[in-house]
Image 1 (cartoon, rainbow, N blue to C red):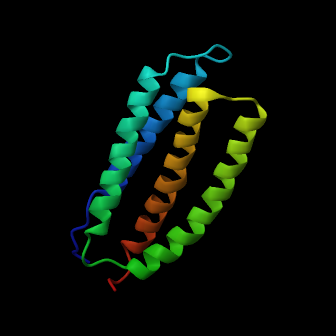
Image 2: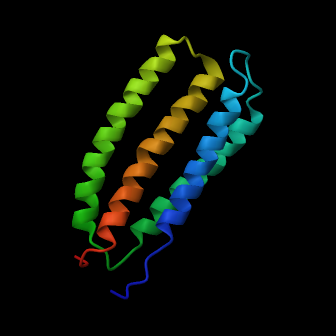
Length: 129
């Protein structure tokens, strides 16, 4: 297979790294209230990379879209359940305000990035639809 595919893994991993750095930054201030500027900047950059990744992926022509969506659908379901449980933990722990918003965005980032990466990793080696 000599198909030229977009750099989906690289963009996805870069987005997840920014999300992880933002979350670690917030965690270093526990139990105090952190300054949110750096974490917001990191999450915005992560979101831009995630959106760019989805746009670039959507323009792939010769690709096994059926396989991609089958894997992505089930992985997204699993990660939505995991993210929902973690969101419950944040609420149960009385996380509020900007920290809650940033932590929720980090969950969304992972709940989208991981299924895209897994599905792409499987579909890239299948025959194009």
